Length: 572
Image (tube, rainbow, N blue to C red; front, side, top):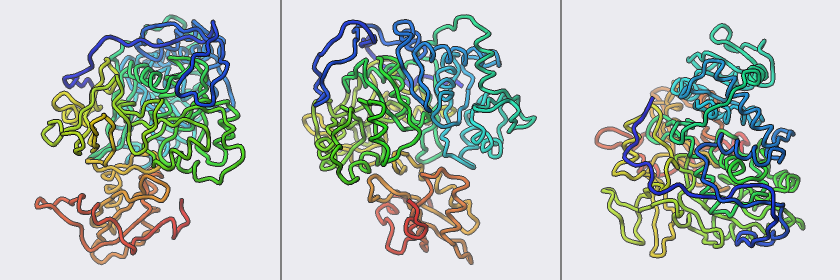
């Protein structure tokens, strides 16, 4: 499906950046270096145009420094040349399976080398990679796969089993990771081959792959719905290099940086660090999952100079008892979302790491941020130079400084953000009305340009770095035979962000057991979306058109009578 550009792509000439990983040494000071300044690896700075795709960036890097280490994942290391060889083999293998430009390739697995080859290989084949959240289950998973309709599904045995038992859509080909083609989770519903066979077929094929065009869709990444089903965000090929360039300018990234990330590759945050390494040099170390006990040990082990946090990661690290070696880490800079001022300042002092707060979304990774050499707790920074940002009222008129309004934006460079929502042209046009992208987030901007985040107009919940669709939670809850109506809301969590709460009107004559309800929901909701609180109420407030009035539900919140899974089940 092709969705027309909703009136705006971006203005200005292509920006330039720094590239290269060997040559003359330099000790140029950086305001983000803090106490980490010192001799750097030998690097060569060259002004080059930003590549139009990650595949183009990978080819450039492999040509310049074929034997330089680039990727560490699952106990293995790979150079730029080794990564290029596997990505191109994956791309050719997909083409031999019949995958054409624009076809979707679905992927469901944890962080491992094949997840990288599948992502970049699909892009190199000018196909569209679709990373499915590995925690999604049930009806939501069936909806996502059916909506994307991938020609090929790639995954490990455990996730392919989940897919085969859940989805009603049948792919043409299933590629199994970590085992042979004898594993046939879809039976006769699809052709099965192993990832090793895919690589071997692609390696034998040979031939040069044409570079993707900048506006071709590279990825469909599903972001949580607000008042309806989850939407597939269509990211163009140039999205990744463009946003890597934005991060490079913001964070003063170096060609010798080591990026450590524990976020999964089905999140845009993790992909941003891989993109930065491909475009500007450095080593990317992919972890498996966040552990507050082992995080700093992993940072030290990899010699990580840059890391990112999402959700409550920074708060949980800060909460740990102080240790004598807290500041004995190689990291010089980290990026996070809005953090309480006292936590942020103490974190910087205690760990000797410069924290950069930023605001963005899957549709456009970086929109506002606190400049690298400043700290401004309580704000989401100022607009990036690459972005046009306004704060507007309900009629899209700019509000005065100090007044609350909706944040709208558009990029100055081409193909730096999404090209629309997959199969949802109406939602695309609505989001892009008046040629500005509407975030649905309420902010307040002062006379100096600093922006304070106020809250959301949209009906979603932010829990531990994940966006939870209230609508999807409600749909899962009302599917229970004992539930008449439901309203899901976010309530403040003691570890930051929100916990999910659901207010339930029980069907006549029914006696709802919250424990049984949660067991029911775990079949259809990802773990992060399963409610912590369940409160049975007599009724829910309604609008004149008999819709549940969520604003009043949020104002009410929950009471002391709400059932708390953390208390009753010892859940965390």
